[in-house]
Every structure is written in structure tokens, then in C-alpha cells.
Image (tube, rainbow, N blue to C red; front, side, top):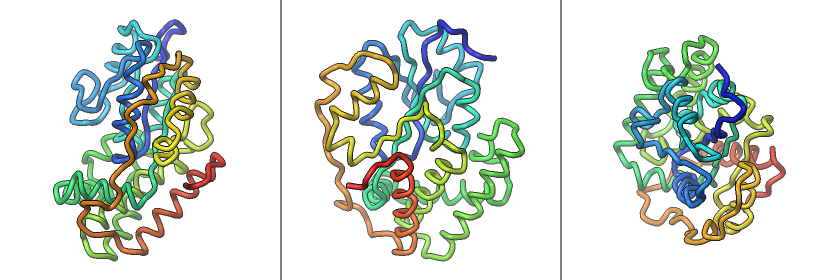
Length: 262
């Protein structure tokens, strides 16, 4: 079922945690033309994952704003299926330099995040219908893609000590590999946002987002942008091989849109 033409425009956020997703959401929320649903909003999300298509459609139709925004980075493994269900949708893809992203994951989620994502990757790699494979919306092709990538990622991770920084690197690789494997890089309705450039040039970033969403720019969108802490306070660093793998993927993602790492 497609949205009628007069419906508000849905906007989804893809990528990975600790990539500036909170800052993007908070600054977009400053626009009176956008209704934002954070991933902890039970109206749109069930334990941080997007609710079924029909429920999201009803939220969009009920909105009086021009844009309805969903902070859906956890659903990135099925970003293509979700966007295909909403042909008028726009999207943001958030990515962050691996050193800082991994450090932020390690600092924010600690051992809880390590155990959670080890279990998620392991069950998906084994073909078990856990949190990740439940995202496939009944598509055997999507389930296989997720399972294969989870198996690849878990195999790489298993070659190293099961530390939180190593798991954070594996998570980075898993989440961002979908950018190419789902063909998100080829979609013209997705705007790639690099965290470093966003912090350095918030005016340029927010104007580009407003242009994508066809809304008016609000000057306050450029205020209160703060750089991340990098490795400050993080417990350890990932294996150099894992880090190199993540950096290579990060550079490929930026290069796909002609962006130079800063």
C-alpha cells in the first residue's frame, strides 16, 4: 500500500549508533515542519526497532507536519525494504570515523553492548530467528543476506579477543556493510552525512538536510554542535586488523559520494 500524494513525507535515518544520530535528530526537531519519532518512542518503535508498516503509515497520515522523521538506524539491515514500502520517503545515512565511533560505542554501551551484539550476531549467523532476522519482513532473500553478513562478521570477530572495542568494530563493519549490499549508495533520495563534516560545518549540513526534505532552514539548527570525545574515557582500542577493515569501509562510503575524510 502506497501513501497518497498529499501525505507528509517520511524520513528515515540509517547507519549505526554513535554516529551523531542524536545530534541530527535534535537539530531537525527544531523545525516546526517536522515531527520526530526517536527510537525510544513506543508509538513508532518496539524496543528500539521500527513497528510494522501499517502502524507507521497511520502515524504518517495522522501527522499535520510536512515531514515525519523516524530515527531508524537499528533497522538499517532492511533499509531497502522499508524505503520501498514508502516510495515518497527521503533518508539520511549517518557515518562516523571508525576510531571515534568505536570509542563512543565502547564508552556508552560497555560490556552490556558487547554481550548483546555478540548474541545478536551469533544467532543471526546460525540462522536463528532472533532480533536481526526478524527484521527481514518474511523475505527469505533478506534473511539470507543478513545471516550471511552476520556469519562473515562473527567469523572475523572470533579471530580476535572478545573485548568491547573489538565487538564495537565488528558492529561498525556489520551495520555499515549494508550501505553497499542494499544498494543504498545508489539511491538519490538518501543524503550521506559524515559526522566530522557535520560538526565542522553544521550550517552546510543542516541546509543540505532542509533542501533534501524541502523544508525551511531554521537558524537555530546551527547552534550547540559539539565535537565527540574520541578515545577519551574509552576502555581500550580495537585490534589493528579490525580497525583497518572499518577504516577501509568508511573511506569507501565517503568516496561513493565524493567526500574526502577529514
